[in-house]
Length: 379
Ligand SMILES: *Cc1c(COP(=O)(O)O)cnc(C)c1O
Image (cartoon, rainbow, N blue to C red; front, side, top):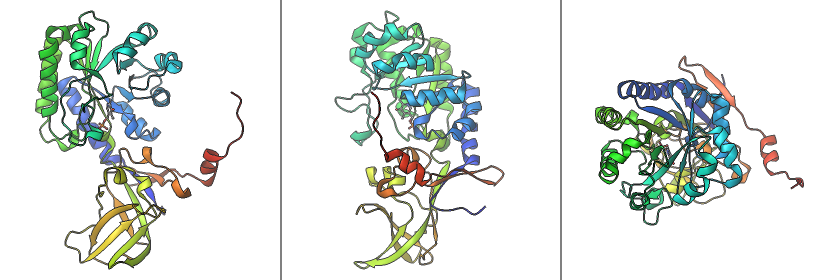
């Protein structure tokens, strides 16, 4: 099949490899695994993940609706969000099996509506910082994510058995279990045998299991907690499931000199991968060769001056039509992408384990027009 660019290519083999690692850990430890669908909610990804997971972790009404459409009652849907909205609450309780409140205010206010419909949990902020960039640190000063562990300790909430679970989520792209072990340690110090009154603990996401060589410490921890506290353990992974299972392929559409360096313009842009701009980081490029003789600035084709991927080296000079492959772009790319400048989204393909390339989605002018054309609505 002739593939047009820019193309977002899902790698089924890698996705299945990640899911099989988790299936193995699940079998050995007895933990439950959820896919955090905010990383990439493609229906095909959800369908592929479904047989390997216990359900989906969601953060809004739309995600909960999509999750139930795929699961059809055959799995759990866990909601965690600071954006619980009163008008949506009833519908959410029909879609979600578990709802984790982000604050005691929400818990006090909404528990009467939720308690007969879904299992209730609390997101706790354990006040242990493992991330240095404050923008991504859920345990930063004056955090809005979760109930301060000291406040929770004083609230008697667990003692009074007002909820059946505790949730925390404190790391991003972690490749060892030190943060998890420290967090559990702190929870046990604070709450001791009150934890036995719970039905479950949710460790959140943020761990890249496929990049961790020894997950025995995780398995041991889960087995110990399940035995001692008689609780279920959940993990809810996004990037650890889909992050390394997709790439974006772009074409070079122009090459020119600018102040002594050569710029190659691509038919993609940072708007297909906004975290490049947000974090000011350079994504991995397959064709990059650190020993290559030819240096190029890879830039996107929008009118934003900072729409730049970075400087890369190549064995041969880049020419019009050459392909550039950005790797490990499965998580938080397409879901954050937008059509600034009227540039379309990439076509979406699935590279099957059998090597076959299947076109899953092609956005058209009609999609763009539909987003922006407006007629008066009844309110
Ligand atoms: C984003 C998020 C996840 C998934 O995080 P990953 O880093 O993609 O694994 C899980 N739980 C919560 C509450 C989140 O906000």
